[in-house]
Image 1 (cartoon, rainbow, N blue to C red):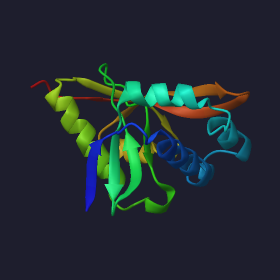
Image 2 (cartoon, one colour):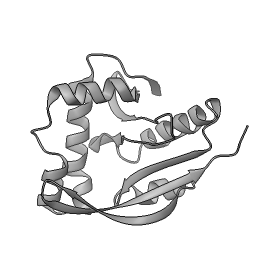
Image 3 (tube, rainbow, N blue to C red):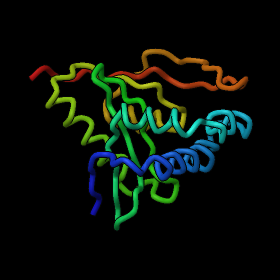
Image 4 (cartoon, one colour):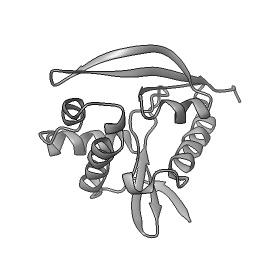
Length: 157
């Protein structure tokens, strides 16, 4: 059973490794080695990452006692991070996280969700009703990566 819970201090390194491993082993199907290495760069400062997670307060997916995904939603509706462990793709982790984010948006009366979505995640977000607003070319550490600004209007409560 997948458990979705709030991030806990001390999980920063686990979430960082999960994100990096996922980008390097899953997103590689849509991005070059150079692009993936720029995106999941090992020089990300631990302090900056810790501060970002503590600020974003992600939801964490746990399966059999192991962290297998995380996602966050900001007050303005931005889904900043959304990652499922490379070894647990297609097992309902992403669906459980997305449903939790959608429920959170209802509780907080967030009327618009949006995210900067990778080529890899685009079909997943489309499945949940997100629409492409525009294709973007983003420069990361000298590499240009394509992603999509996607959004979903949420019904007002």
